[in-house]
Length: 174
Ligand code: S3P
Image 1: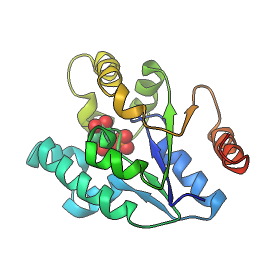
Image 2: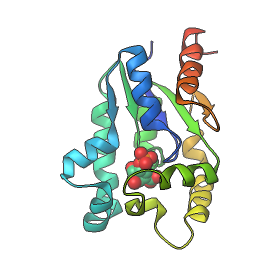
Image 3: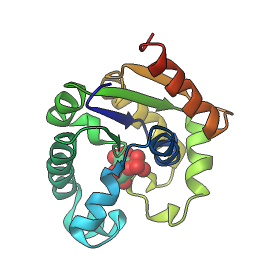
């Protein structure tokens, strides 16, 4: 088994749900780096972006990714922008298995509007959230390409996504 299973992908691709189910299935702890950031600042991610700005957010994100990936046998869910950082990207690839979850921009937007406080999400700000998601997916293509496995979550029950991942691990990652 690798050191950690690291889930990456844009918001709304299912990292939290799949992370929780995968953690239950493998009996490994789940570390959600976004939740660690909220704990660190003592406020929501929207409030951190608003009060401290993205640069401060990214600096703490980088530090918490490094601390988390120091551990072993964990399911680690990274925030959608974490892999853009070259240091975090290198750490994620080193000794861990990186699993990218995917969905179409329209599906991502529909899922995000169904989550609490959707209007506070920094990446949905502005007139045209769908256009923003599309352009961020293009801009982040290199970051998201750093995966050992890519799983399309489109029109799939979360349990099925988990079975695909577990099956792939059990087959020796082929
Ligand atoms: C972000 C994604 C969010 C969170 C922050 C920034 C991004 O994480 O880290 O709002 O840059 O795409 P999720 O992918 O868990 O929503």
